[in-house]
Image 1 (spheres, rainbow, N blue to C red):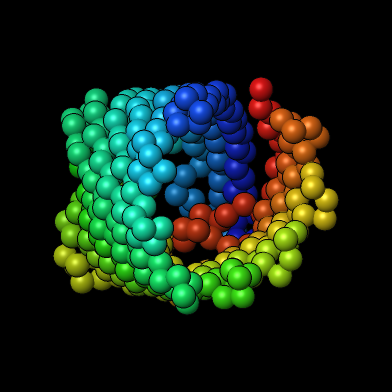
Image 2 (image 1 turned 30 degrees about the horizontal axis):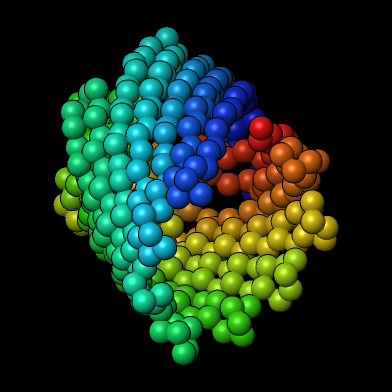
Length: 375
């Protein structure tokens, strides 16, 4: 695929950091973790008229976002068979956008309280019950919960599992205040609510050197945020559903080598309009592998193929099926000391040209480098 818009350029600058303190008290029965992280992203895109695109949707746009998060998590081992995880987290975001002179900005904060009780009975039955209350300064207070269970039939190393739960997602600041004339923000958006269940089975073989499993899932969404034609602003979809299955196979031929194969089949529909939900691939393949030639070195690779998905044509608004694409990545990590790690990651190594979503070209080859330290 050749370059579609030679005058379209984007500059992005991102910053991420996190400081975390871990503790262990009462012989490891209480393990608290306190963390704080700050991130920022600045993006500047320009697209001037060209022969290929004489009338670009947007010529000059800026986005500047910041996010501050803090959390306090606690693990409490009540007995050998019962444990509790609970805590509090805080999230404050700021965003500013400017699209050809049209501006939008806003801020939002959310505080959450959560807890999860886990029990292991007779070493083969696992039960968990979790709840969460979010206090959002824009959308008020919302409660969600989740329950699950798994049973291991030890003679054949077969595990059966199931869960059911609810979820809440507030619109992002960009979805609320994003400026522009193409899928712009909508301050009247409502939060997304969902509920769903999943049922699955896992099978271990050869002393767990080979493990495979399959899970069926079904989810119902209310007020799902979408950008329908004529693409002027984001809107809530009254009712949507998704269902499908996930399969995986994990192979560990040696203690220093492992491979993972994953496949997801997904059907997602706007029930209200009886149309497929866009930008949700029907078929997704993932292959991941890692080798550890030395105790302090890890080398990995990944391959992802995305196909059979729907999207809106960026010009006509008609529902289309974009071309499939395959991405390759490599990772590396080196433990300089027990508490200091150097890491690197290369994305889109084959330099594939693809659009996700349709009309927005994804980045070419990218390289990331960093350091992690624990004190």
